[in-house]
Image 1 (cartoon, rainbow, N blue to C red):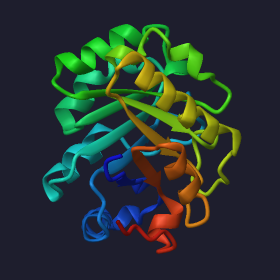
Image 2 (cartoon, one colour; image 1 turned 45 degrees about the horizontal axis):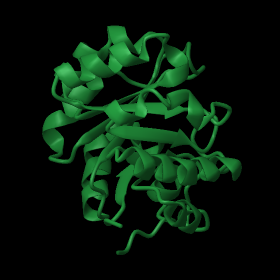
Image 3 (cartoon, rainbow, N blue to C red; image 1 turned 30 degrees about the vertical axis):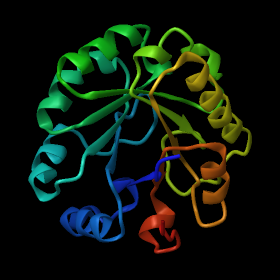
Length: 210
């Protein structure tokens, strides 16, 4: 197994000092920056969008791991790619056009990911797994930081590891939600390749040492 990637979520950072948050991520060993985009429709909160991503793009050399928690993501792929996203992950539940959305992301030269909510089974992605770069398993209900990890969601990571081997695919398996010092060993032992952590990371509770 390769060394897992830490992708801290800016959702739990001080929004008045995003440059400082980016510097902290790099110093702590982060290899990507997770950026949660929320539209107030797919999930109730509203966070930030393309202008903010564009404004901080020059402040970090790390890949921007943009997680779209928005409805009709296929209509926004180009604008997020142009604003500086490197990995674009949308929700399976947010569109009836997942294949089209993946195609649009790849056409922009970006890594394409799909995220699933806790109530969505891995089997929903069966046709899409061979063309994905990332599968993001939500281990909490999307929309808010600081939630506790839902244990049964970790089983989805194990299921994806087995499917990846069976299919000969190469997608990364990402985990987002409730990852802290006590739950980190669970998601890593299950086979997660990318670990997203917000509250625990920015509180200094999550130690990342490999």
